Structure formats: C-alpha cells, structure tokens
Image (cartoon, rainbow, N blue to C red; front, side):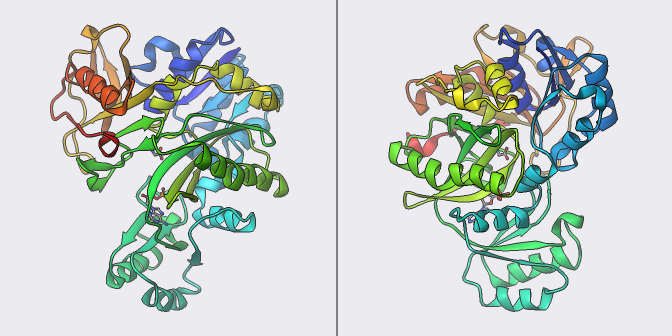
Length: 425
Ligand code: AMP
Ligand code: GLY
C-alpha cells in the first residue's frame, strides 16, 4: 500500500514511525514532514491545506491511502476535494469529511450533537451578535468559574476559563464585538465549569464499528505542578492509572457508542480518528471536546503502546471492516516529555542547532515536533521541538527514563517539564 501522510508535528512523526514498520506499507510519503520524519519516507514540501498539490500527488504517486494528521484540512473540506477527483475513486482517506470534522471545527455543532444524542457534557448556551444582550444578562447570573469557547478553530486559544463576572463579560465582548478570534469567535459557547481530571480517549472508526486505542493524559500547562500558561501539551502518560474497567465501560457505553450511533443517525459518514477529551468528575465521564484527529503529544505515547499493525487497522477502517479488528497494547507505561523553545508558549526564536541526537541509544524514541534539516544540521523550528518517549513499569520510571534521554539533547533555550506524571507518583 502506498501511503501519503499529511502533517509536520510529533503526532505525524509517531504515526509515520508506526506506519513505516508495517509490512503492508510499500511506500510512505510525507508532506511537509520535519527533520525527524525524513528517514521514514519520501518528503514533499507542500502544506496540509494545499488541496491541489495533495490531489496531484495522490494521482502522480498512485497513492492508495491518505492519512490526515491535523484538523485544519479536514475542517476545510479536503476529503470532499479529493473525492471529487475521478482518478482517485479507490483512494482511502483516514479523516472525516467536513461535517464529521465540524465536531472539532465548531464547538456549537459539537455541543448540539452531544445534547441531541444524550451524551454527558457540561450544560451550555450559545450566543452571537444577535442575542448579545441576552448573553450579557446570562453571564451576569452564571455561577463562577464561567467557561467561554470561541465556536471555530482558534489554534487552541479559543477557550477562556473566567474566575470573575468582569473577566467573563470582557472576554465575551472581545469575542463577539471586537472579533478577537476572527470568525471563529463570532459565535460563543458559554459552558458550565466541570471540576475533575482530564483524560484523552482515542477512537478509530469506520462510521459503524470502532476500536479504542490506549487512553492518555496530557499535561497542558507550561509550568511544573500544572502552573502557568496553556500550551499545545508538554508531556503525556499512558495508561492513566485511575482508568479502571468500570470507568472504561462507562466511557464506552455512555459516550463512544452513542457517538458512533449519533453519527449514523445524523447521516454523517466518518472514517478516521475521534479524539474525545474527557473531564472525569467523581468517576463519571463528561465530554469536554471532540477532535477529528489524534492528539499531540498523546500520539507519542499511544503509538509506542499500540502493538497491532497500524496500517492493518487503517485499511480495515477504510474498508468498513473494523468489526473484525482488535487492539493489542503494550502493558508497560509510556511517558513522553516535550522539550520546548525558550519563551514558548509566548514569543520564541527558531533556528537553534540541536546537538546530541546522533549519540542517543538506538532504541530511543525521539519524535520531532518542530525541527528542520538545514544542510547537515537539525535546527529548532517551532515552540514545541522534540518529544522523548520512554517505557517503564511505573510512571515515575518511564518519566525518569524519558528525562535521561532529554538531558542528552541540547539546544539554546531548551526547557522541559521535569514533573510529567507528578500526581501519580
Ligand atoms: P477545549 O479546547 O475545549 O479542549 O478546552 C481547552 C481546555 O479548557 C480543556 O483542555 C480544559 O482544560 C478546559 N475546559 C474546557 N471546557 C471546560 C469545562 N467545561 N470545564 C472545565 N474546564 C474546561
Ligand atoms: N494534546 C491536545 C491536542 O492535541 O489537542
């Protein structure tokens, strides 16, 4: 099978690593990729939203399967674009069409979906310019904290957790009247605050059947002890110790199955990943978000634990035959620790040489997130630069092993959180 993988982050490096190990993969192409994915497949420089270049590549290279890493091309209609090409009738695409992707692309769409299908989630209301005054009154009477969400994609920055009414009213005004998040924020979801522990659950579905990949917990804050600004994710662990059989069963029966049935009832065909962000409140699962893709850095712990052939699973999803698949998982704990550029998640510089990568033990799992090959040298090319994953018999053992490898890699301004998994030690 000739496979084209779209994306350039740690998620795509981890996917490319697993895909390239499959005997079913005869050729892997990656666009645009990063310095780490270079050794796993042939690269093209076009971007993930260059639909015409993607279409032409699929035709020219006789691609059998496209695996879409990030959400943006899906939300913008890549699947419909490729489906319109008569020469690509037999192309398999891992990633949903625009309607399915709206589960991530529109918070209001996702909330209405959850409510319509009786799936547990925080109660909410949505507001636009039209009912702005009503929104102000609603906020003034809302219990604190108040959660405000810009409706559309806002690069992970569209959620405000407000601890005062003043903050909520200002945030609301900025989103709707001043269009702080552009079009994405012109509709706002106001949501009840849920106090609990977040986990990430990954479903691969063909639209009717599904398999569940190992769950993970992501560490979003920049600082130790979960302090400071939000980031794309500073590390992850899998499995999550408190997720036992009882909770897993609730997740399956109350959320995953109703989600798949809901897609069918709404006539939304869906082939791909659904990443469900949960808040576990007193042992009860609530959905806080859907994503139409895998998580980053969660993929960097999920893929190393996945022992089933990934291409086999993806091919089964594309063929509508996931019913016959089961998942085999490494029982050990995986922990990934993300190294970021100094200053991230605020301003940071790119282009610093990265040292030490070529002296690591061969078995090291280093997933590039924001790197670039410049001649002989690999340099930093993003806020999040490298995720190092290691296994252990416990979270502390896996985390310590990941830090040991991180310490052998250097670049100017490098920072990582040394406490990933801290609450489970
Ligand atoms: P989202 O973009 O929906 O994942 O939201 C970003 C982050 O905001 C989540 O990872 C949570 O930490 C937090 N969050 C979102 N919704 C809620 C909620 N209803 N209650 C508490 N925290 C939330
Ligand atoms: N790590 C969270 C995300 O990928 O959205």
